[in-house]
Amino acid sequence: MKTKLGALLRAIRNSKRLTIKEVVGKAGVSSSLLSQIERNRISPSLDTLLQLLEVYGVSPAKFFKDYEIHSRVEIIKRDERKIYQRKGFKYEKLCGESQEKGNHSFSAFFLELAPGQKRGDAVDGHLGRELGIVVSGSAQLIYGEETYDITAGDSISFFSQIPHVIENVSDLLFQAYWVVTPADGEDYFDGKIT
Image (cartoon, rainbow, N blue to C red; front, side, top):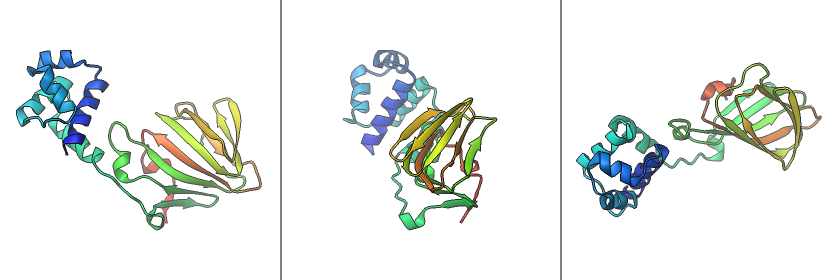
């Protein structure tokens, strides 16, 4: 428990771009104490923790919710994956639900597109970034006004704000691992669970 608590407090401080000196001046704690907390040498008292959270502008409820989410390891067995499927395409969710919540959320899935099928939106993008690793087949990424060919072994990454479509223009099944951050939720899949 101590390891995760200290690391999370350090991550919050860093994300707020605060130095230890700035925090100790506002929270009324010593730099030695804060350093020991962040290095997991000691656990903070509840009063000290609340003082730090106030300086960071994070409510205790949000902190403990994030702590619960970030401290969970999820293993999804191959035969227990949720599958979203429609004619011509299939997504297999690879990450657990806890990874799809919070500030650093992401969604990971295995994507299959049959020949001639496409996924995405040529008109609207969405917040975030995407990373794809092509396992087999080939496809085209239509990204705004540009078109990119991707084949087995390629990886591709891009900002998702630009409208984008992945289209299988070959005669073979296209398969890829895909990661989207932040998580877009189940609406991203636009399919049904099987």
